[in-house]
Image (cartoon, rainbow, N blue to C red; front, top):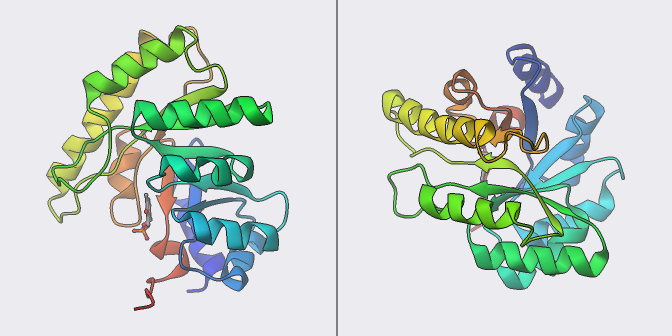
Length: 224
Ligand SMILES: *Cc1c(COP(=O)(O)O)cnc(C)c1O
């Protein structure tokens, strides 16, 4: 299977509401262009340096999403290049993004990353902290940010029941916000969850955005 066929097969298996973020980390421009020519427009990167290198080499209508952990001192570099930041996992990071949005005169679209996995290593806000931050946002504390929804990463495990529980938790939290605090905010509408190994479970649980790398581009090989 080539990249174009992979994208077509993936698209055909997904409900229309679900957007595909093609995770192009470690992939060269040529392979990204193959996906682009197959109609893919949303690409996700998780390293600032890689994004900076690739962005100028690809067409202007590519919609870049930053999906990785973002350090506050890199916010300035990333913000002008991206349509959506998926993994805002602290108040401090949101403040930096807000400040940068103000500086360039544009509202920056973000998702809050909620910790749903069991692993210690995964980033994300606890539910209470996310709620507190969202309340501050609704009270206009971050005027150069638009919060579009939530993002989460499930535990890396073959236990599909566990993964299902984690996605269901994120989905229920989103629903509660959508019907409560955000009942009058149509802009709050995305749940970014699901990767190559677990996207079907995520979609069953209400994902609106899946972040797919290896299923589109093949296995990644990391330079050592
Ligand atoms: C790498 C990565 C993905 C995609 O992983 P695959 O298993 O290749 O689909 C999704 N989300 C994040 C945050 C990633 O870093």
